[in-house]
Length: 355
Image (cartoon, rainbow, N blue to C red; front, side, top):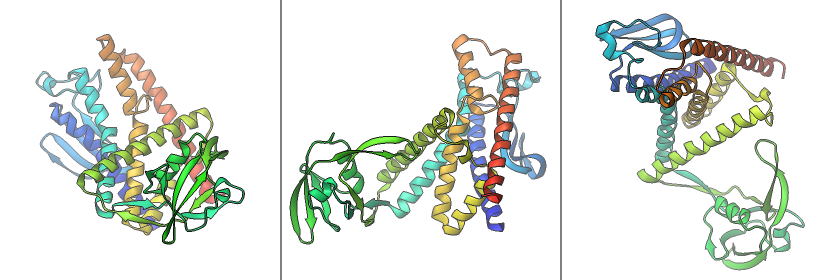
C-alpha cells in the first residue's frame, strides 16, 4: 500500500508539474503575469514567493493550476497591470497559452520515450514461426515450427511486423515465401485466407492470415539520436491515436464504461509498475501523460479544450463569447466532470472490493 501511495504521488506530481509548466512558460513568454503556480488544490502546505509568483504545493494532489493576472474576463485589473493581463492579450496568444498545458503532456511522453529508446533501443520481434495451425494456408504450404521468413515476394522481411503487414496487404493473392530452415533456404507458395477475428476493442474485423503464431524470439536494436527521436514521435502519435479512438468507442458504447478507472486504479497500477522497475514506471507515466493531454483537449468547459473552443469562436467572430454563456457552460462542464469523477471512484471501489 505504501508503495502504491508513494508511486501515485510521484506519477501524479510529474504529470501535473509538466502540464502546469506548459501554461506557465508560454504565459511568461507572452508577458502574462503569473500570480500563483500550485501543485495540488486546497490549503497550501509549503511554498516560496519568487518575484510576483507564489510557487506552492497544496494539500489535495489531484490536479494543479496556474493563476494568471486578469485570467477571468470580468476580473478587475489595475491600469498598471494591463500589460500583464491574460484577458488583454491577443486571442492567438491566449490560445497558445491554454494549449501549452496538454501539449507539454505530449512533450513529456516524447521525452520519456526518447530516453528509453536511447538507453534500451527498440525490441524487434523476429519473423520466426512458433506454431502452425492445422489446415491453415501455412500448414498446406508445409511451413514448420522454427522456420524464419526472410522474404515475401522478393522483398526482405526483417521483423514480424513487416511480415504481418505484407500478409495483411496481400488481398488474398498468393505469396512467394523465402524461408530459412536450419541452414537451408526453401521457397513456398502460400495463399492467405480471410478470417474474422476480434480487435483490441472486442469488435469483429476481417484480416488475411497464414495461420502461424510467433516463436517470441527477438532482439534489441540500438538506435542513434535521430532514430530514437523519430521512434519517440511515432510511439506518442500511435498511443494518442489509440486514446482518441478509445474515447470515441466509449461515447459510441462499443467499450464498456466499467473499464474507466480513477485515482485508486492509477495508484494501484503505479505501485505495480514501480515494483516491476523504473522502465515500466516511466512507460506508465508516458502513457498517462498522453491520456491526460488528449483528455484536456476535449471540448468540455473547465477543461483546456473548452477554453480553446471559446477562444476559437472569438478568433472567428472578432468578439469574446458572452460572459454569462461562458459561466453557464463552465457550470455544466463542472457538473459533467464531477459526475465522471464519482463514477470512476465507484468503478475503482467496485473493482478493488467486489471483484
